[in-house]
Length: 133
Length: 95
Image (cartoon, rainbow over all chains, first blue to last red; front, side, top):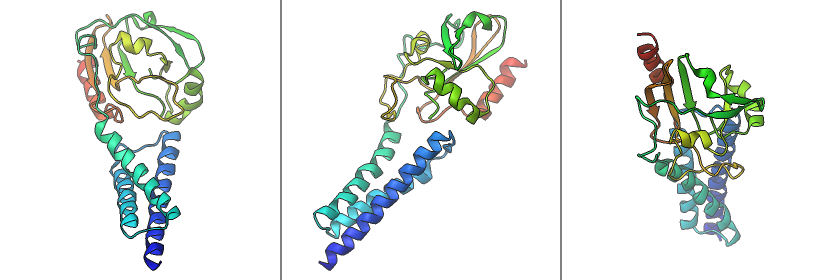
């Protein structure tokens, strides 16, 4: 029983670290303030996953196994997605240096139509990014 | 240019303090014209409506519409480093 209690406590600690790190991550996403160096997040998530494994090794009650399992899943998700998030563009269609920028229309933040013709005669920096997060 | 909806752009642009034109390309129509749709895996938040994402890219374009320089990110979670872009602008825009 004592062993089960120890495992359950470690499991709760692991889940707390995973949850707090996730909450902080989404807070920073919302504030558009994610740091370029995310190694602290990787360390914290991996710590949560390792503690989750440790909790299961130490044995938990059946219900007590839920927090460490959550910690392992959450803790591994972020490092894994970071490691597999390679960019793949279609080589035959991607724009290259020396190409002429295609004419396009789009919509701005006010809902107004934007026509790329207004860029003619100007030096322009065009930035593609995924979204505010 | 991003997959953000216009209302999200209007809501969030103050967080960047940006004055540049910000455009919504949720269907990736413009992204596809430039061939910049990311064909790889991405982990968009569950609330995100976009089916795919562009590869983070920065292009410098001259007055005739010709691409002078461009930078593609190796990882969609990273964007072009500002110092790299500024150096490229100095080279290509201030010859």
